[in-house]
Image 1 (tube, rainbow, N blue to C red):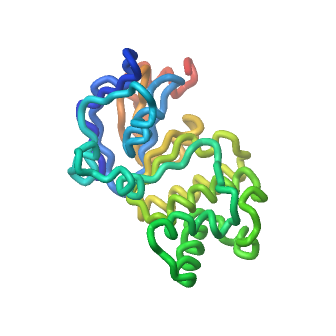
Image 2 (cartoon, helix red, strand yellow):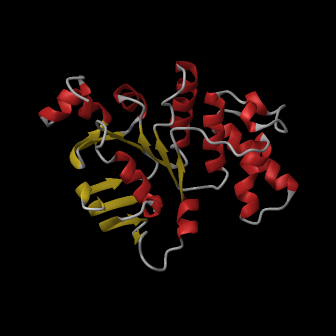
Length: 249
């Protein structure tokens, strides 16, 4: 397994957000977490690369294993972990610099100085994010000049430039039009060949289109998880069926 969640409990002050979560995430798959608001999905994503620690008075019990190692062990480099487990947020946040420099920023900080190597990284990352053809003649232009959908794909490319093993996406299509959403979904299906993807989808329909497996959370509890087809066609728990058919949430 690429990631193993073992007896995971997360608290903010005295409020519990995640309850005794046990779940395996396989390499080279897209796992989608679905559930109504306040189900703890973002908390799980932020726990996987230790961004949760930035929230005051939050604490965690249990283990999160990446390739068998607890990512919360004292000897684990948080910076190194976040290079291995990159995150893309719901609102695109390009850096106030050119398209090229947005992608090259991370590799430069990591010590890559060669212009030719940086160019190769930028092109490869933009290609994987399905943005190269739209930007190859505009690399010196400000990233802010891109459309919303292009900015989101730029943020995905920026994460890919760091050559992660896992990509976390927190509702990456929430503010996008159907065409931009389709391009990102097509990219995700291709990216899973090289990466493990954990997705908080924009809606249940998106989970059905792109996921290999789906996990349903309700108020911090894992209700059920399973492979895409069986999950949507024959959910085991009536609460899952109620949610995916729109009876609540």
